[in-house]
Image 1 (cartoon, rainbow, N blue to C red):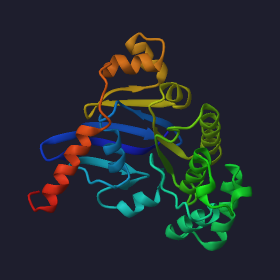
Image 2: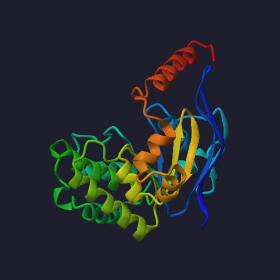
Image 3: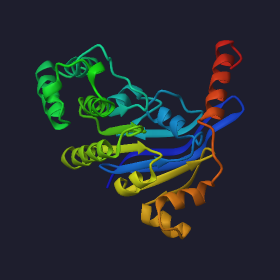
Length: 267
């Protein structure tokens, strides 16, 4: 199976702080891949580099055959993303949110119309297409964000904590949609989550990052075997420790400080 994501010796520094420290991994085409780690481990920084939001300090990223440094536009056309924080326009309808996204990605009008109906029907929101998003529940908004992220036929769908704050029923429905889409359209799914049972049940392969380094990778069964544990959660704790981490505080503070230095000309 061909790799759709290839990461080689990736590094990201903010001043003297190394958020991502020489990591390498690959994701196969059509795979459901989980990228796990404690708060502040480097997950979000890695995703921001994979999606061209941040430039790496060193290393190489290839996504769908395109080099992230030299062909960033082609990389951006190759993926869809569902952010951890809501990114919909609450004052627009579901249909308007979808249509605006399609226009921004240059999807032709006829194809856009057909694709919007197909995806909204698939996530069971077609009957609510003319409702403003501010009327939607959290689960409905997540489903709409997933449909929007798939509108332009991306090769990879990035999901950053997609089920955070959702009830178990909505989480199960959402993963059913995503697994079905993965099977029907061959979309590669790259996701982060703090729900270990979710990763164990859904992901075909897993990489665990801690303190900016990949500490383990493989299937859930391989990680449990390596750590001699009975669950992915126990394996995760054995690999990363039990100390409670601050909510990305160290990385965020370093990024902000570096941003102030950069704006001040002391790069």
